[in-house]
Length: 150
Image (tube, rainbow, N blue to C red; front, side, top):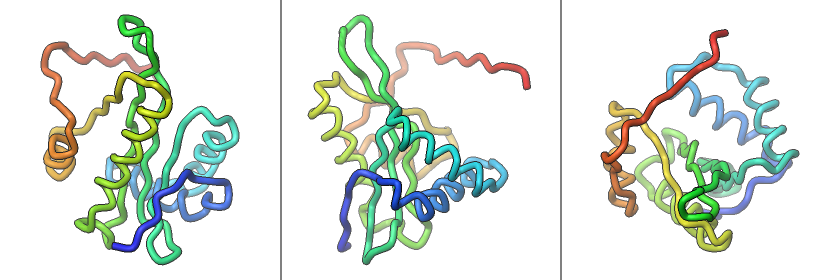
């Protein structure tokens, strides 16, 4: 694997949008490339998320996107690893682990107390990957969600 992990820039928007659209389809969403491009353009412009990309031989093959949160009890920043994706042609080559390591480095350099993530129970690969990358499954609380009716 000859990879370069770096922070995403506006120059990455076209390739990153394609990866993001594939990521959304993995989670059973309808393809919306223009929506993906708009969403990511806003994230990059507003700097309200951190996006790192994996580049292999000049082409983007994966990304990780994190959103800042805060832990009131710890009185520190906390990161939500919301999106992690490597395209199907590049899986099994270690890109996910390198992207996770970059996310950990963001936690260290931003003086955060850690990060958390959520993944589907049917995501067999992710449910093997995250423990192997040092994440602990947290069973002590119930997770609830409320959605606005659209």
